[in-house]
Length: 88
Ligand SMILES: [Zn+2]
Image (cartoon, rainbow, N blue to C red; front, side, top):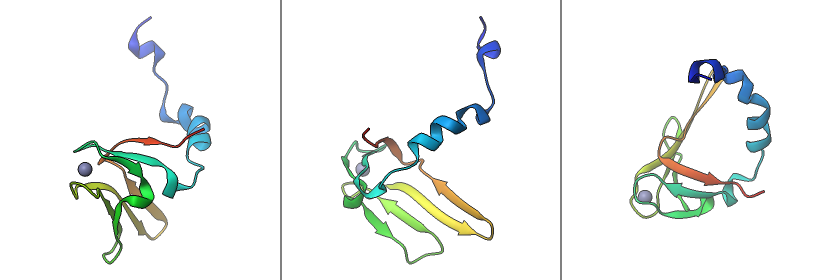
């Protein structure tokens, strides 16, 4: 079986992701992709005075995630987070 024959489009993940993205984000243990700090999201630094909101690591101040809204869209960039532990 080849990789290509096993591949599905992104819609195949929709059901599982709907299960995962229902949580209280402030208690989600988040690991910084830069320095490895692991703490509940509520312990991270938030800057909400710009056009969007930026969450930064409390140890190294690198960007963990960004959230912005434009008409009809909500943009979430979690590129700075290595992992999120959302519990059970
Ligand atoms: Zn960090």
